[in-house]
Amino acid sequence: MQEKKDTIKYYQGTGRRKNAIARVRIYEKGKGGIIINNKNLEEFFKFFEYKQQAISPLELTDKKDKLYVMVKVSGGGQRGQAEAIRHGIARALVDMDQELKPVLRKNGYLTRDPRAKERKKPGLKRARRAPQWRKR
Image (cartoon, rainbow, N blue to C red; front, side, top):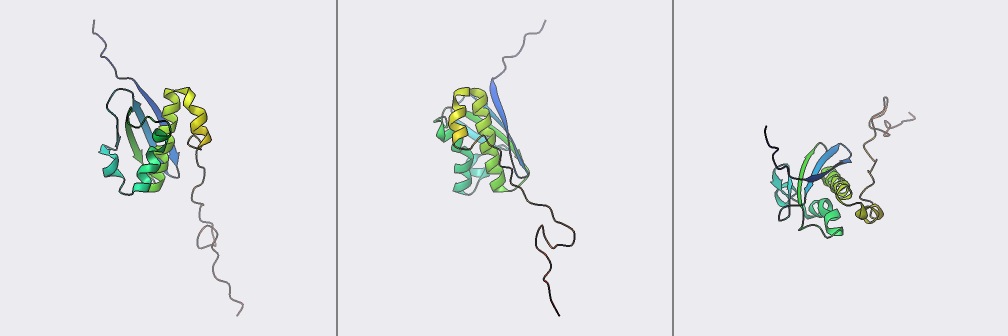
């Protein structure tokens, strides 16, 4: 009979924003660090604002240096991916510890932002932009 391998415990959360989807896993063991698509945070996000936005739930709960975070994100642009990562990290933190839910909820990290690009309508140039009207 085979023995089961010692599996590493992790907590997961899925974050979404516009067309971006982030699958987040949080490991309690480890020295801390954030890996996004096999790159560290500084390599993946060039802008400081996106880095801060992505890790804001960890900073709010004082768990930035205590947890190891692994993220796979696809779709959307840089801002959408940063906000999807933020949403996924917040959901994974709630999966790990239910007592963090009121704090994260109050700051709006658990609410999925429903805003997305509106579709183009027939007869219009964009979603709402009509062709220029001329009387004569």
